[in-house]
Image 1 (spheres, helix red, strand yellow):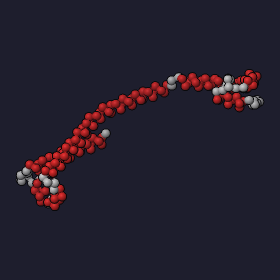
Image 2: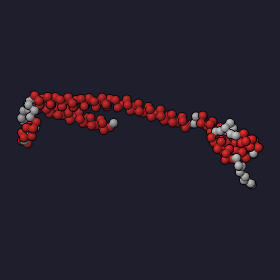
Image 3: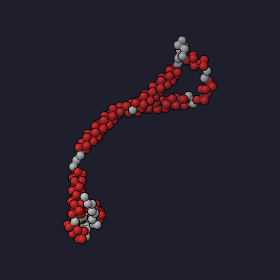
Image 4: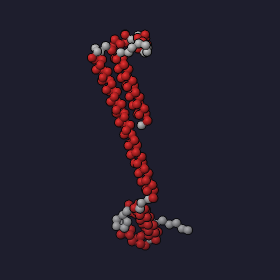
Length: 167
C-alpha cells in the first residue's frame, strides 16, 4: 500500500473547512480536483459529512422530549409549591402584624403612664414577682393585660418562627 499525499491537499482541506469550495477557489484548484483522485475523494467525503451534520442538526433529538417533560414537571411542582406557600405567607404576615400591634399598644400604654422603663429594674424584686404568681392574691386588670399581650406576642413570634423554618 502506497501512501501518497497531494500538494494541493492542505489547501483543499482548508477551503472545504472554511466553506469556500468550489466558488471561493481558484480555477487551477478546481481543475486539479477533477484530475486528482485523492483530492476528488476528499471533496466527496467532506461534502457527505457536512450534509450529514447539517441534517442531524435540523432533526429533533429524542432526548429533547424527555427534557421538555422534565421541565414541565418542574414547572408543575413549582406552581404547586407556590400555591401551598401562599397561606403560610398570609399567616406569617398576620403574625408580624399582631406583633407590631402589640408593640405599638405597649409603647402607647407606657407613654400614657410616664415612660418609666429605667425605673422597672430598680423596682424589680423577686418577692414582688413571686407575689404576682400567688393564686391567693388578687391580680389587677393591668397585670392581666400585660400578661395577655405578652403571651400573644410570644405565640405570634413562635408561629412566625415555625412557619419560616419549614418553608
